[in-house]
Amino acid sequence: MRPSDPWGRLKVLKNRHNGSYTWQVIAGSATLGLVVAAGAVLAAGPWDNGQRKAERALAVTADRTGGAHHGRPTPDGPRPAPSAPAVLPALGTTTHDAPRDAAALRDTLAPLIGAPELGDKVAASVIDTATGEQLYGNGATTAMTPASTIKIATTTAALSALGPDHRIATTAALSPDARTLTLVGGGDPTLSKAALRSMAADSAKALREDDRKSVRLTYDTSRYTGPVLHPISPNENIAPVTALMVDEGRLNDTDRGPAKRTDDPAGDAARAFAAQLRKAGVKVTGTPREARPADKARTVATHRSAPLAALVERTLTNSDNDIAEALARQTAIAKGESADFAGARRAVTNELKKLKVPVTGAHLADGSGLDREDRVTPALLTALLARAADPDRPGLRPVLTGLPIAGFSGTLGDRYQDGSEGTGLIRAKTGTLNGVNSLAGTVVDPRGRLLAFAFLASGSLSATEAEPALDALATALARPAR
Image 1 (cartoon, rainbow, N blue to C red):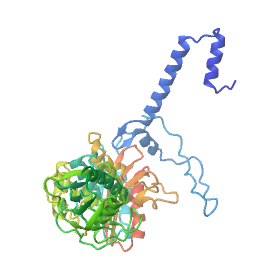
Image 2 (image 1 turned 120 degrees about the vertical axis):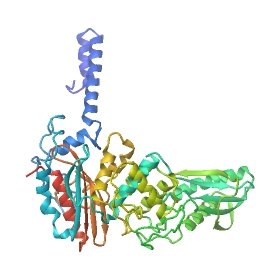
Image 3 (image 1 turned 90 degrees about the vertical axis):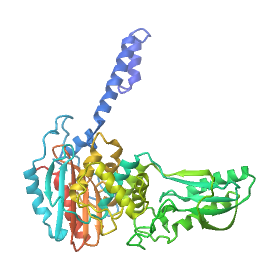
Image 4 (image 1 turned 45 degrees about the vertical axis):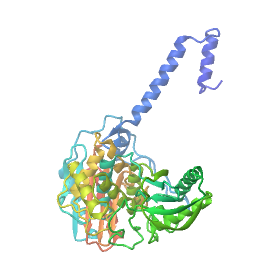
């Protein structure tokens, strides 16, 4: 009988008690199971200011004395696991209530903020998310070009206005005489060919029920208004901003990063839908043309996007410009503004005001950060991150969970490598334009406090030099005071 066999132990007890289990054994086993389960739950811990308590306790252990880094055995070998940290302190024994020493933090960041690689102008803000106290500021209220870190504002406003469970609907509407089918764009840039295939099947079923074998196809993009081209367009970083498109208008199989884009995403989507209708047994007469649905047309097919929470996470992790612009317009629609660049700017700005964050000096020219006319302050970005970490605002949490993780995911996947102290501890949104580099996110400091930071730099000569300098600033927040 194996000593590790729990059921074997019960067999011993059975023999010991002449073939019968006692209620004491059963009750004791059940109690032991409940204790183990409860311990596991407590170890995981609830959310606390945007971090699980267990995660925060892990990050508190800054003394990396355990194990050894053995390097790569071969050039093509897998990356070795990082050295194990020192033994963790018992939960609840870390100095969570002890604030970071602001003076020591200033001494730590001062030489880093002046790095020449960052250019001729740098603004910064570091706050304690639990208290809102500014621990470090260097031009924290100075409005600067944020590049893609503006997506923090765009996504926070969208979640605040619409909620994390909101889904963007694309529909197909059939005219009363069943002769015309209209594909109606709702503004979902992630609409896929698979979704169109499903919608075509539902539409074909409705046509058969009306004893129709052919149909004219139109498509409707009226949900958005104003110019479809972003000020920097045409550009491989963003498709024309329209309410109807498939796979962000990409002309290859990628789902992130730069890619050649179609100049007619709505027309392409309609033609792809027509092809799926034909495969479903419906004859499509003529060429799809742009038009609104007929009066009293009925919806015969609907596709809904992933929940807004998932779209927000994808926007931030991959720095997705197309989804960011869609979220800005969805916010405008929800707030009764025109669904164009100007209406989105008003709607997002007003929603941020409702969250009582400092919008003075902010100018949200677009939702993606591609427009050089954008302006935000470091103080605005850190305040937004603090709102997302607020336990009383769980609907904003995707802003934190979507931030790229240093050395692991998204736009930080290839940064903080080679044993950086920030790897895995820093979550941040990146921003890059010619001469503009930024980084804004969160980190748990050595005292177990969740800090929000924003570093905005302009005038740099090279992103490859500026990015390590920004990474060094964020990493310094994770280190104990020296």
